[in-house]
Image (cartoon, rainbow, N blue to C red; front, top):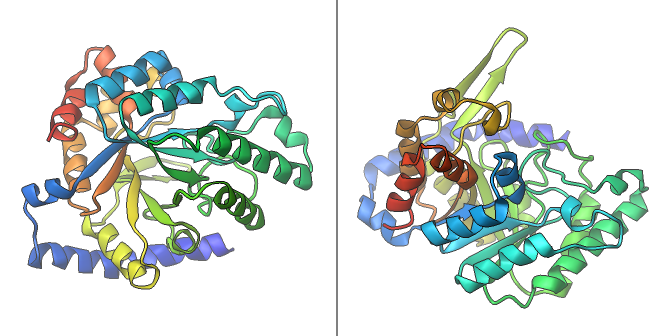
Amino acid sequence: MIEFFSGLFSILLWLPLGLVGYFNQLLAPLSESELLQKWQPGIVYSYKQAESLGLNPEQTYSAILDELQPKYLRIIAYWDRIEKNRGSYDFSELDFQMDEAEKKGVQTTLILGRKVPRWPECHLPAWYVDLDSAQREKAVLGLIEQVVKRYQNYANLEYWQLENEIFFTGFGNCPKEDNGLFKSELSLLKSLDSRPVLNTSSGELDTWLRSFIYGDKVGVSVYQRFFVTTPFFKIGLDYPLPPLFYHTKAKLFQIFFKKDILITEFQLEPWLSQAPAKVSPEEQFRELDLAHFKKYINYALHTRIPRVYFWGVEWWYWLKQNGYQEFFSYVQQNIFNH
């Protein structure tokens, strides 16, 4: 029930905070050069997403870091890849990503826990489903301890992110939210390492309140598109929110919490019902063409939230490998080489 009212209240905030953001943009505009001086763009990289596109995930990762040279990066500890067999850990994929980022001096956020980015959101090992609640808690706390102890000595590790949009249950295939378990995870993580812990929320469909309560830093996702689905049709629409909506809402919470906000997931790939590799580029471009791609990047800049992690780097690279290099090139020239 709390999720329903949280979502409802967040939608009710669209109008007043959207209007404040709109008039703030009119009355106190900033030039593009002023915005770029403060901008800290980064990327989110998913091994699994690269694989789903038919890419070699290690080669793709290395190429992206070399060609884009991002200063900021979010990577994902997929539990079902790390602990396929209970009590036996394989960190080879994550070691490679952390080592490459360290070599290149990329400030890295490591996402860990039960719920992490990319469908189905909860990437749980097969053996987890047969456990009772006490065993599940012991298992996830064991994972967190193993991950933190393995990577806490990396100098380029900037933040931990514990879970992903843990309080937003409107998307994904996950067990019922367990607030008590999340608190136990957070307490353990803080006992093991002193780095700031990110807590993330849906930018449009969550109040952000619990993220500000629990996180040392707060991350929000920003999606330009949403879908209305009925038994008769499905239509994609843009959220009716000016870019300063997010900045305005953040300022409201910062009055009470004094915590920084980041955009941890900014949509720069099409929302498709199938993996992109199964959909023709022409059909994908009907959902997100280059003109809208550029428009969204401009929108991200004008949120006035300096740290923005862009979502979809695997897709840009896949397009490049398939003869559509303009998306990757535009990002390279206009985001990371500004």
